[in-house]
Length: 56
Image (cartoon, rainbow, N blue to C red):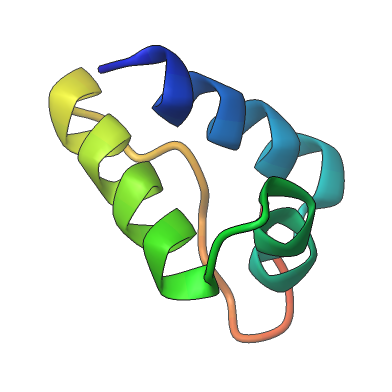
């Protein structure tokens, strides 16, 4: 876990949309997705329930 992953998580919580969050962070959506997956792995938990159209 690092500060970059935590910051990305907070922006994603605010946006609830990978594309918009990635845009705010000036990174690509796959990069954001990878950061969140790494954070989930380090915390050994799922942070978001992913659905096709939304995050919960």
